[in-house]
Length: 482
Image (cartoon, rainbow, N blue to C red; front, side, top):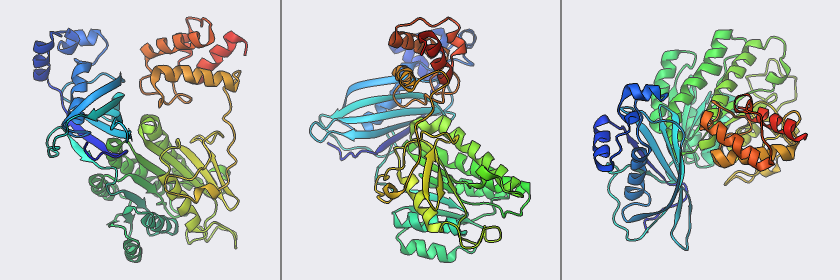
């Protein structure tokens, strides 16, 4: 069998055309007007004719048969879920990632995700193997192979600062290549990272300037990084415009540039260096805090759209850090070392299993919560390949149940919803129009599944009024008296 490893990815892009549908209809006899008649498609609720699901699956077959596992492949089992309608004449980006390889049987378990206009349109699982292997063709046929062991590049902004440089060095020591963004003066850092074994791309840019950001974004997109660490910040005394340009707009633009590469590999991390000042609002820090809060909204959007598909958003909130940035306002003799912050950031990037979260880091240890600051995020275990996270303390508690719902009820509702949407769906913070695949049709299926789970009948109003997870839990609690 071809040498396939967990984490290997097959990637391809296809644009469906009306001519392809004509050929498809001639072969299958499927002349459904929703696929070729714009007026009929509009009556059915679509902006334009939609591609038949069977056609949408075609490029998946190409990835399996030509890339992973490659020529000689046999499909054993599939489970696909259409998430959104696919339009003609716009590219669809396909990613097939190997989750597991059975050494005894040679069976591969793969996850498939397809995007159009950055929105998930198809997700599913495939089990496949190779019966009679043949040589794999080049990347021009069927798609390209991205090996799990391909070089990993991390972007660090504010790389010349105390925290940014410490993060860069820590990642270099852990085997990451680097793209370092700075305003200048990073020559020594570049040398030290290269001595640690990293391939370093040094980009001089003023992130307060939109033109500089656009140029940097284009260069970063070409590198397809798997991590973005936003450590850049305007001086505390800067005005609100500079704080927002560097703290918020730079993260927005750079994250937008690197997301496509992460989506293709179904893996990636976006880490924001926040601040505990957001919790305490020191006098005179309003512009700084506003920029951090705006930047956090970028991470919430990333988690909402891509969190279920391998892209992880993390806010690291350190207290005072011993360095030049806060020297004028930091009480003498206190503060974290930049290296302590860097270790935590590197741990979070290496942890590909935990959900999005914020981590508050003080000299007493680390506390995890969800992105909104609610207790209940997973604790801080050792990340894959990193062993020092286990020593960090966490005081994260259980997530609070929705009003009127005990934790057992909430868990049962969650299980019912996942039974409809799939095991990786964003459930607890989700709902109609918020979670991929949770639309009005799925809402009917979810209500039926919840009714079956609890042996109850929900009011007809639940189809609309309970279109969010917390409201659904309340409706069940009201019906069951829990």
